[in-house]
Image 1 (spheres, rainbow, N blue to C red):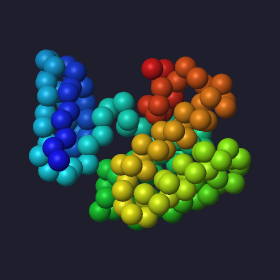
Image 2: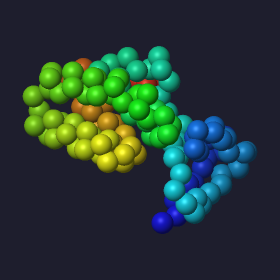
Image 3: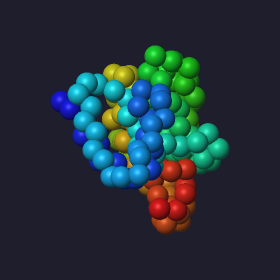
Length: 141
Protein backbone atom coordinates (compact mmCIF):
# COMPACT_ATOMS: atom_id res chain seq x y z
CA UNK A 1 0.00 0.00 0.00
CA UNK A 2 1.59 3.33 -1.04
CA UNK A 3 2.37 6.00 1.55
CA UNK A 4 1.41 9.54 0.56
CA UNK A 5 3.38 12.36 2.19
CA UNK A 6 2.19 15.95 1.88
CA UNK A 7 5.10 18.24 2.67
CA UNK A 8 5.20 21.88 3.61
CA UNK A 9 7.85 24.13 2.06
CA UNK A 10 11.20 23.39 3.69
CA UNK A 11 9.84 20.46 5.74
CA UNK A 12 12.39 17.78 6.58
CA UNK A 13 11.88 14.07 6.99
CA UNK A 14 14.03 10.99 7.31
CA UNK A 15 13.74 8.34 4.61
CA UNK A 16 15.62 5.12 5.29
CA UNK A 17 18.18 7.02 7.36
CA UNK A 18 18.70 9.91 4.93
CA UNK A 19 17.53 13.39 5.89
CA UNK A 20 15.50 14.84 3.02
CA UNK A 21 14.21 18.41 2.82
CA UNK A 22 11.37 19.66 0.67
CA UNK A 23 12.01 22.64 -1.60
CA UNK A 24 10.30 26.02 -1.49
CA UNK A 25 6.82 24.78 -2.50
CA UNK A 26 4.27 22.45 -1.00
CA UNK A 27 4.60 19.00 -2.55
CA UNK A 28 3.29 15.47 -2.30
CA UNK A 29 5.41 12.35 -2.49
CA UNK A 30 4.08 8.84 -2.92
CA UNK A 31 6.29 6.01 -1.67
CA UNK A 32 5.40 2.81 -3.49
CA UNK A 33 7.26 0.34 -1.29
CA UNK A 34 8.09 -0.18 2.39
CA UNK A 35 10.42 2.43 3.81
CA UNK A 36 11.25 3.92 7.20
CA UNK A 37 9.86 7.45 7.11
CA UNK A 38 9.75 9.88 10.00
CA UNK A 39 8.61 13.49 9.78
CA UNK A 40 10.65 16.29 11.30
CA UNK A 41 8.08 16.83 14.08
CA UNK A 42 8.51 13.20 15.20
CA UNK A 43 12.31 13.25 15.28
CA UNK A 44 13.88 13.57 18.70
CA UNK A 45 17.48 14.61 19.29
CA UNK A 46 19.45 12.72 21.99
CA UNK A 47 19.49 15.71 24.34
CA UNK A 48 15.69 15.91 24.12
CA UNK A 49 15.31 12.47 25.72
CA UNK A 50 15.07 14.16 29.11
CA UNK A 51 12.14 12.41 30.81
CA UNK A 52 11.19 8.77 31.43
CA UNK A 53 8.75 8.53 28.50
CA UNK A 54 11.11 10.36 26.16
CA UNK A 55 13.89 7.94 27.18
CA UNK A 56 11.61 5.16 25.89
CA UNK A 57 10.74 7.05 22.69
CA UNK A 58 14.33 7.81 21.68
CA UNK A 59 15.71 4.23 21.45
CA UNK A 60 12.45 3.12 19.82
CA UNK A 61 12.88 5.86 17.22
CA UNK A 62 16.42 4.67 16.61
CA UNK A 63 15.25 1.06 16.20
CA UNK A 64 12.70 2.25 13.63
CA UNK A 65 15.20 4.38 11.71
CA UNK A 66 17.99 1.78 11.85
CA UNK A 67 16.13 -1.53 11.69
CA UNK A 68 19.28 -3.42 10.72
CA UNK A 69 21.03 -2.14 13.85
CA UNK A 70 17.96 -2.26 16.11
CA UNK A 71 19.67 -4.63 18.56
CA UNK A 72 22.06 -1.81 19.51
CA UNK A 73 19.14 0.17 20.94
CA UNK A 74 16.97 -2.63 22.30
CA UNK A 75 18.56 -2.98 25.76
CA UNK A 76 18.19 0.74 26.49
CA UNK A 77 14.57 0.63 25.32
CA UNK A 78 13.74 -2.47 27.42
CA UNK A 79 15.37 -1.04 30.54
CA UNK A 80 13.56 2.29 30.24
CA UNK A 81 10.20 0.67 29.51
CA UNK A 82 10.58 -1.63 32.52
CA UNK A 83 11.41 1.35 34.77
CA UNK A 84 8.44 3.29 33.44
CA UNK A 85 6.06 0.38 33.96
CA UNK A 86 7.31 0.01 37.54
CA UNK A 87 6.34 3.60 38.30
CA UNK A 88 2.96 3.75 36.55
CA UNK A 89 -0.36 2.55 37.97
CA UNK A 90 -2.72 3.70 35.19
CA UNK A 91 -4.13 0.50 33.61
CA UNK A 92 -4.59 2.08 30.16
CA UNK A 93 -1.00 3.33 30.05
CA UNK A 94 0.29 -0.02 31.32
CA UNK A 95 -1.68 -1.71 28.52
CA UNK A 96 -0.03 0.68 26.05
CA UNK A 97 3.36 -0.32 27.47
CA UNK A 98 2.55 -3.99 26.95
CA UNK A 99 1.40 -3.24 23.39
CA UNK A 100 4.64 -1.31 22.75
CA UNK A 101 6.60 -4.33 23.91
CA UNK A 102 4.59 -6.70 21.70
CA UNK A 103 5.01 -4.48 18.64
CA UNK A 104 8.72 -4.27 19.35
CA UNK A 105 9.07 -8.04 19.59
CA UNK A 106 7.24 -8.31 16.25
CA UNK A 107 9.63 -5.69 14.79
CA UNK A 108 6.67 -3.37 14.18
CA UNK A 109 8.70 -0.38 15.27
CA UNK A 110 6.52 2.34 13.76
CA UNK A 111 3.43 1.07 15.60
CA UNK A 112 5.42 0.94 18.83
CA UNK A 113 6.78 4.43 18.22
CA UNK A 114 3.32 5.91 17.77
CA UNK A 115 2.21 4.33 21.04
CA UNK A 116 5.28 5.82 22.72
CA UNK A 117 3.80 9.21 21.81
CA UNK A 118 0.86 8.36 24.09
CA UNK A 119 3.28 7.77 26.96
CA UNK A 120 4.79 11.21 26.39
CA UNK A 121 1.33 12.80 26.29
CA UNK A 122 0.39 11.05 29.54
CA UNK A 123 3.65 12.10 31.17
CA UNK A 124 3.27 15.71 30.01
CA UNK A 125 -0.22 15.92 31.51
CA UNK A 126 0.94 14.34 34.77
CA UNK A 127 3.93 16.70 34.99
CA UNK A 128 1.95 19.77 33.96
CA UNK A 129 3.69 20.15 30.58
CA UNK A 130 0.41 20.31 28.69
CA UNK A 131 1.62 23.02 26.31
CA UNK A 132 4.42 20.88 24.89
CA UNK A 133 3.98 19.01 21.64
CA UNK A 134 4.61 15.34 21.15
CA UNK A 135 7.33 14.38 20.90
CA UNK A 136 9.64 17.05 19.44
CA UNK A 137 11.61 16.68 22.62
CA UNK A 138 9.40 19.03 24.56
CA UNK A 139 9.60 21.95 22.17
CA UNK A 140 6.39 24.01 22.35
CA UNK A 141 4.04 23.18 19.54
